[in-house]
Length: 123
Image 1 (cartoon, one colour):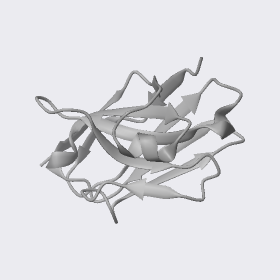
Image 2 (cartoon, rainbow, N blue to C red):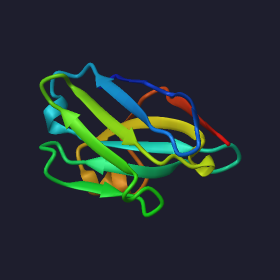
Image 3 (cartoon, rainbow, N blue to C red):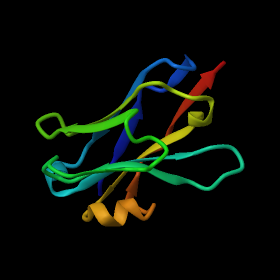
């Protein structure tokens, strides 16, 4: 069983930056692709970014390309989401997800989920 714990959410002004972290308890972290998802009030959860187990391949939603960067440190069992140039529309609960396949994550699904962390972008 993979346990995921997100941190780093908070309140930030538009145009600002924030870095989210997701720590995994599973010792086989390096076998999982990891992803970030978000859910805004009244909307469905959507894929934001994903990274392969090796870190060599990344996917991004069009809405965040050029602003967000996903990375992972397999030695620390942690995946990160660096968010720059934040917009009001980025306000959401951000979730970390893990799955054996990066392409599966890109469809918006995952085998394991964290509890989520709130990101609020203010004007």
